[in-house]
Length: 256
Image 1 (cartoon, helix red, strand yellow):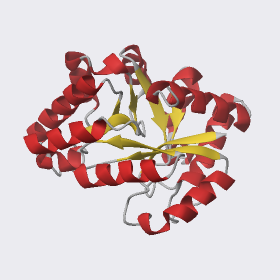
Image 2 (cartoon, rainbow, N blue to C red):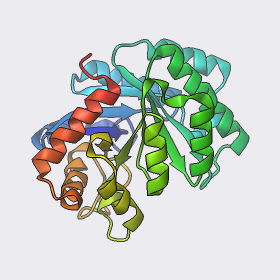
Image 3 (spheres, rainbow, N blue to C red):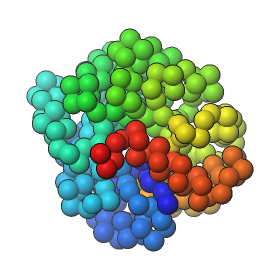
Image 4 (cartoon, one colour):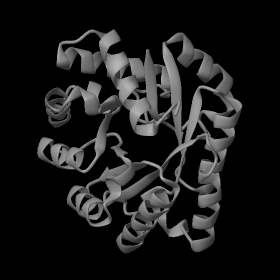
């Protein structure tokens, strides 16, 4: 019924329990899990998990927090890793001007380099954007980043930006914050954009949805984001699961 389009099951909080986490996800109706890297090592682990578990696909790349680790040799290793058929996309890449754990200019350069990598590999991209909405949009346009499609993960921008980026070839993904009562801006975006461009995710082990906040997040809990989206769109949960899964398969070319 569901696909968790963005999870970090290789995270140290989850990696020791992966078989149980996958079983739990299966019981909750989660057919596939997209395991997303945030540096080279976590990307390599994502590919290993995707090779081991048929329901898992990998996304490889370097998070803006770790942009300072993206050297030429790292890009070369990511290129080789990206040729694996279990790799669905490149990411998560982008800009994070909230924590600034890598210098901003380094983040910008790493973002552009990974967009180029994705083009070389004919892969879609997964973007992390926090407090950097306009710069992310500018780089996307300058680099024609949506050439092979992509996803704005855990979307936190406004409606006009979402519509602008959808025109550039991007899908919009919602995570646990969609279930939070004070997420009015996110609710507006989820209510008004086309259902055919929406994905759902957990971003686990982070951003646990209501009513489980305070617990460790995992792919099975993507059902709560689906339930909130169904409520906002006046649809059944089954219909939301079907549409968002179809969208995820389309953007990541799962089964091609």
